[in-house]
Image: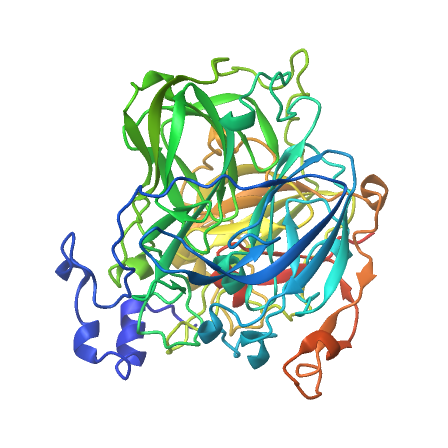
Length: 597
């Protein structure tokens, strides 16, 4: 059996040539509050709440263009312009697309990227990554949460190279919800998204129109605001950085880093003037790595009214909630309870995972500040019921009974090197032929067995699901009884007999339809998924479509410009499922799957 080793032992064994053994022996307790760990890079100290929160532009239409470009962006008043990526002329992120349900969206995606802002961190040892990606990065557009034909899903190997484009069709014949789009290119997703390639898509229906006077009585117009939350590291020169520690050399994949600066809509710790009334915030965790526990600094209550795929049956009052990368939450906040001139901050106190804490990483504490103005705001009140009534959508249906139970695993096989070698689903790599192949029309229960101590948000493309619950696992007993083989051999033994307690139901605000679930460390997280048929979808989810790669990867010569050097190879088929910690997705916590007839 290959026993996992902790991060400290790993660093002692492999990091001496990088920092020296003496430095690696410094215990975490040696860094008192306010003292920065020498094992980490740190962003320049900047003053919070000096830049106003940007409002992202809105894009509407049935035929749209989305163009990815290399840009420069000013993240803070006191920092210089930083190299970045953006869509449609924005210097960072992309516009918010608003679209009606049931109306197809035809979208032309084009790649106009040049030298990558994070070129020094392109790791050519990762699957599918070429040295030329540093100066001519490919991109792949994925509509996260979209019920989308496979050739328009943004498969990580269906790459678009600089100078090229691809036409996507998104039927959007699905319920209203909170989708988002982002890059999904094989091996560099973390770099492309971190540099700026992300945006929202709000799917509207006749109930949730986004207009004043909507049947549900929800805040609209200036009182409905998308919030793209991120955390980031900056170099001493004020440039974006994905490297958290000198222990990992430049150009080497890192298993994930906690940022020390919070961003909202592309600005560092911005402020937002608010009226004394109700606001609707469409919140997205667009981070590469961290789960956050979100709350307001005065611990005031707020209301969750929806999640990934639409509204809940009723508003859920909370004072905090955990949100993992890729998850979305729809919340109402009432600032009428605060006096003019008062301020309140959106905060986070989720502790970093143990492997990050060993290096001295701490929770990134805040995102933005709200400044209450002396003017009235939205005064309609919090709707207590959102579904099932007159002029409301139908209630969320009961969870279906599965006919198939499928067990899958989340693990981190270690090797004595820095960084640890790989992240894995089912102990496999992306190229493994041993993929999940659920049948169309079946309802399955997926038991996601996480033997790591850390949370992993697991995302399934195409489908939505419901969370059944999370059950604690005796991980050491489970691993002792089922020794994990070398990477590349499927390993997904049943967890029966190794459970440490009863199943815990999802939080009330997790009760709706989802496409991503937080799988906590040392748990079995169970979800119920129905895999739709081709007749229901209006397209074949198992159809093949072409894959194109640069000649460098196809055995030819790389000329540094892939506009005329891509090469058609064998067809692609199906979708992917993966961890949405983007560092993990890139290496190699992502597998293909097919939905077969």
